[in-house]
Structure formats: C-alpha cells, structure tokens
Length: 544
Image (cartoon, rainbow, N blue to C red):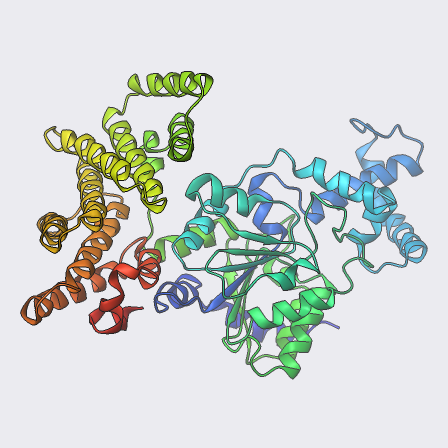
C-alpha cells in the first residue's frame, strides 16, 4: 500500500537535500581508512553503458506479445500498425498480463513477461548474457571506480548481473576486487578485507544462478542475508539507480531495520531520479517499496533528488577532490607493450627467457622507441627495472636486485637533465627516491644505509617546496616516499634528529590525507614495516 498525497508531499519536501552538500561530504571527509557507507546500485547505473532497463525490456516484450497474439510476424524487426498496438496496450494488455501472472504465479510485470518469453533458468541466463556481453563501463562507473580506488567506498551491493564495475576498476585503475555472486561463496570472504567487494545480490550473468522471475527474487539465500547484515553493521547505505521493486532486498532492509539495532545506524540514503521518463514525474519514481520503507522508518530513511547515477558519481568524485588517473592524461605511462615487457622481467627473476620470449620482448621494446611520449616511456622503463629489482630482493638475490635499482636510477636521472613537464619530473624523482630507499636496505653498514636514506629524504624535502601541476598522484607518492625515508632513518636516529623527523612526518601526513590518492597511500603506510616506529612511537599513529 502506497502513501497518501499528504505523506508523499512530506517525503518530497525531504528531497530538497543536496546529495553533494550532504552525502558527498559525509563520504569524502570520513577518517582515513574508514568507509562509513555501503553503496547499492541497480539497473539505472548501467543505462549509459548500453544495458537495457526493465522498462525497456517490458516495452519490447509487449510488442512481441502483441505481434504473437495478433498474427504479425515475430522475430527480427517487428512491423505492425502502431495505432492498433497502442489500442491493444490500453484495452487488452492489462487482462492479458493478469492471465500470465496467474499462469506463472508471479506478481511483477517484469518477472512475469521474462518467464513467459524465456521459460527455463538456462534460457534466461543466455538472454541476459547476450544482452550485456558487448556493454562497456559508462562514465559513472569510471567515477565510481575512482572513488573505490581512493578508498571512499569499499563495498558495493548490486542487483545487476553485469560486470561493468569490476571491468572499470581493472581497466582504469588496475584494481582487482572480490566479486561474490553465490550464496555459498559469500561466507568465505572477510567483510574487513581491504580489497573492494562487489556483492551481486541476484547472481552473475556468467552462471545460471541468476534471479529474474518473481520466484527467483522472492528471497535472498540465508548466507547472503547474514553476510549483508554483517557488512551493514554501524554503516549507512546509499542507494542509487535502484527502484526498490525486488521483494527479497526490501524484505531484508525492513526486517533488519526492525530487529537489528546495529543495522545501518547511519541510515538509508535513497537517491531518486528526478529526470522525467515518458512524461512521468519524480513522484511516480517513488515505488511502493521505497514509500512504505520511508513510512515505517521515517527517522532512518532519507530521500534525495538525483539527476542519475552518472552525474551523482561525478559529483561525489569532484567533492572528494579526485582527478583523472595519470595514465589517462599521459597514456604511454601504461600500455600493453610495457605490460608484456614487465611480465618478461618477472619471468626472468626465476628463470631464463627462451629465444622466442626474448624475440618478442625485443619487438615490444622496439615498439616503444617510436612512441610520441618518450619521457613517459623512459619512466615506464625505470619502473620496470625497479619492480624487477623488488622481485629479486624478495628472492634474496640482492646483488642482481641492486643492479636493477641502479639501472632504474640511471634511466630516471637522464630525464632530470631534460626540459620536462612538471608531472614527469615528479615521477622521475619518485623513482630515484624509491630506488635509493631499496638500495639502502641492501647496504651492509649503518653509515651506508643512512647515506642512502638521507639522499632520498633530501630529494623529497627539496621537491616538496613546490607543487605539481594537474594530477596529484605523484605528489602523494612523493609524500609517501619521504615519510618512508623518515621511518627508515628513525631507527638509527638520535633524539634530536627524531624530533626533527617528527615535525616533518606530521606535516607530510597531514598533507597526504588531504589530497587525491592520499587515503590509499596512508592505508599502505599503516601496513609498512619500514615505518613501524613512526606508528608506535612517532607522530604517524594519529593519522592511521
């Protein structure tokens, strides 16, 4: 049962909240390492990615049903008189739909028509797979992936079957997530894991366990319900692109709000699309599921006007102060040729390249020589040498590791003698610093170690007198490297030097947490053994 007109008016007045001014600030200004909100997305999130919505599918199925019932050819392009179809839709379709609901035991128009045209679970899975197999992440997924990469969201619930969010994380940010679409699998991962988590409430298009019909979406499996309740403890839920028409999800929300005091203590924040569709208004966008939830739990359910998933994610992205990843502004910092060269380097750590591998590596290297952004390629090569050195160091092949670090320094030093863009210079200095920190850990004497650490520290402090133009990722990396240099020096420092380092660390940590990528870097510092004294006895402990 929906709300009365006066109650709807009261709800709509609460839509005056601006998601940017309230929701975005709550997400963006959370303490480092904490994510106070779980995000839930529905079919509306995938519209700009080319995935058909339920209403679009219903419209197509209505045309198919009309053609079948009235003797017009079905399959391919449907051709029939539009006025005749419109009259059938008004006069005959409601009765026809009720007949199908009785036949299939369904409640919803979408679930009933889906089951009518695709009778078995296997047929429905194949239909969904064909419908989304060519879809690419829309711009909203790019912004959401950036928010996840920087630590503003860690858990995303979705009723969608597609893999668009996971694709965006890998494609744009090289991040791997935990994707769970199975009742049995959902119990096997930790909700406290630092990796992004994508929970598919109704399954994944690659498997036949997806839920589409009313019977399939009536209930969530018990394991899924328990895990969702755990992940939502002492959190808030932001909902966007979802109509609230799945009884399984709405029942979970209602039941837990009623009986679980720790469930979503920061409330449910539901973003309602204000863009009219086919003459509809925002009032019509308030489904019975949303309105009834708001009526029963008015003090914990808040509604917001939204112009759609893509625009909302952009507003969140900008409110958090994020910017494009550097490989979008400088594409040659990451490409397939460089990825293959790095893969060969990783293989060389423990084995010898065959003649075929060596030939292919030379081809890839040759392809980089003609790249228009030569400085970016030089930096990429320096990074490759550094990463190979780190792999060798883990295998205790210290002499070979040192050679890689020295080659990386040489490649980066060449760039410092050239007229470079600001961001490229920061990248070169970062690489030299990280190599010197690694070389310092390989030195046998305390004096030699401190000399390397001091060299990296001095480079960082000097460069931090300026600020980079544009992308702040190299700025965040340089702050991180300089703090690491302080941490490595701290263990051998006298009390006077420690006091000086404390001041540097406190200032740099404050700057780090206030900029793009800083949250992720600070999380990494919290797990870095090189700075453990800064965490236990020094100024870093109050930032993590």
